[in-house]
Image 1 (cartoon, helix red, strand yellow):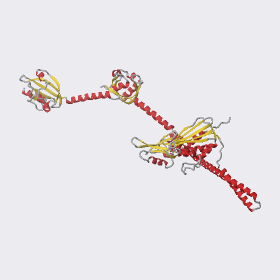
Image 2 (cartoon, rainbow, N blue to C red):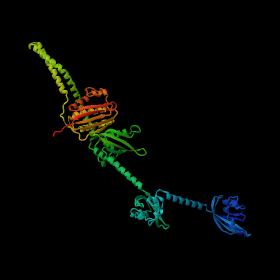
Image 3 (tube, rainbow, N blue to C red):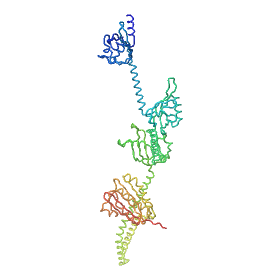
Image 4 (cartoon, rainbow, N blue to C red):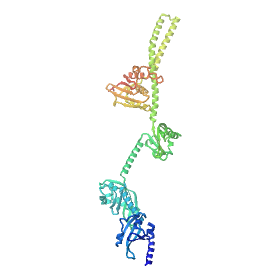
Length: 607
């Protein structure tokens, strides 16, 4: 019997589980090696001291039940061993007939931790399933949802998950049922689909674009039993794509319909953008230049490098931009295009230079008009000088003619009193001849200096004003002067010399510009009644002093420096207008501006 007990103890020591024997007074009689390792040697000590690390009997103690013959199984966490145990407790009858409790402790800590991780993982998965912003689903092969998250329910407009799980996927979910068949064919062939574009429909029938990503679900035998994945609502993305496309189309229309040439090139100079105006101005077709031609080819030699140098000059705020830079470009036929270039360097999000873009304004017609205007102005200036000389010589002739005629009459009388044979008679005749010659010379000077009288014809005042304002537009803009026109429709014609009226308006506009050195507004208005036409030319300039108002139309009167002029402009203008049967009135307020009002008789066309 003793040998059997020893054999049993040896067996217990070889077990992987802990074994202990506790008598009725709760004293430990035996512990195998596994128990000793986990709890220390506690033989002879009360079990709750060793196993529970308590001074008092544990409130959940099962010893009494076991001593009464019950077999028990329970789980326990030991604070002493820091382990979970699956404990089997059975009654054990000693040789003396007393009953003890045999407990077998199996360490299930690893299993317990695995279960907790699995539980946590399931909870996390469920949380992710429910709270992810995309529609997550599990579906059967036959076409039913087995599970779906709240996001998918909301996306499809169903009031409850239960209602969603009842729908027939091919007919109730897919806008086109054949797309379901394509999805099944693709996912079963490939094992998965990624970002498949399909259209679903909501409960109310509203289409909804979706990106579908999913994979196949198999059973233990490898048979396809369904599918699972996510659906991403693309409504906002598609709307944004439409808006971006619309914006791009709008910007492309602006670029390609711009009246100015718009060109862009990468940093190597290869042209990447060429609009319709560039085609028209420079003669190159878009398909012949984009990706094929270097931008340097449309500039004279060295000019492209100079432009790039200008772009990289300036302070930080202006660096990379160039405005209204005068350049000439080379057309395909070798001719040149004159104009202004505005350009900039385009940077990426990291500030790295990626392209240059330029807008070229063709100024050929305007420059030709300016050159013609300059010639006209020079001619008008010469005409003005001649007119001034005419007035001056007219005054001189008037002042000198009367004394000359008196001298001539006196000499004629003296001739009658002296004999023709007398030498003094010859001296008188010589003096009379020179006096006549002086009178003729004055007459020739007056004839030479008087400006040519152009033939008068019916002219449109609005047309003349439009032409002159167009010529002055650039100059006014450069001087920050805004032009405001209020030209009456169907204005009657006037019978006038077109060149003389041009000289009047040119002089008026020049004076208005001089009166607004810091910029302002030039307002030109026309109006008419049955008898006359009225032209108002108003500026917001420095104005005219009250004491000078009555003198401004007098010859040689001026408020400008001698460099600016000699005061003949307004007097000439006034003379031309009066010669045409009209009048000029002026109103002015110092510091506020001046308004010249010109009236001319309306021309009555012969019937």
